[in-house]
Length: 272
Image (cartoon, rainbow, N blue to C red; front, top):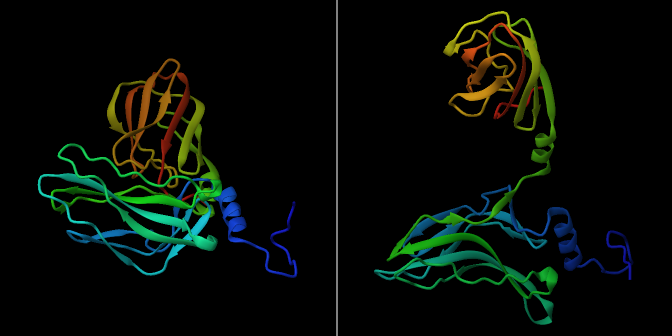
């Protein structure tokens, strides 16, 4: 039977199950830590204690909040043996359908060989599961020593980041050895170069610095040389860019007509 959830019914009728279904439908069926607070940052305090910071997560549509850091005890390791423990957020539905969530350390099996992760509860509450584990960290133990924790969760980016990833900007850029320009188009953090040009000079280049620089907003993210324009036709000419905007040239433009293409990633602020 159809029921209006977000509407006044004259009685209490909206359920946690309905809210979880809405969350799962919008955010997806994966489990996510949200991009707020400490994002459940882990700190190793001692050989048998870790602290999990504040955070918000959504597991199978269930929203779980940790408002204050929490200490968890890791069972001491044994000399000569290795073990993988997992820190999980555990959902449970008990008697009278009372639901809860808590952080749990799931102990692995000690071994002298290569340790494996312990088994978890994986039946989603959306499918009727009464216990479900969302893994947060793997805690490797070698003897009595706790190794570096390994994060096992994804951080769900906010809608503002999704919007930025779809934002598009374009400009034109005059290339070396030509009076012509090519187009630079940016979509999110990916830049595309393309166009047709006529070069007005010949001569071999061996990573020669150009007078031209890449405009701010389109500069490559990497600190080393990145191919930003490769020309075809009767040329063997490549332009490399740096995160500073510096451009160096390799090959011979050969005073030719040529087509150009290039793709690279940028971390520049999005142009206005």
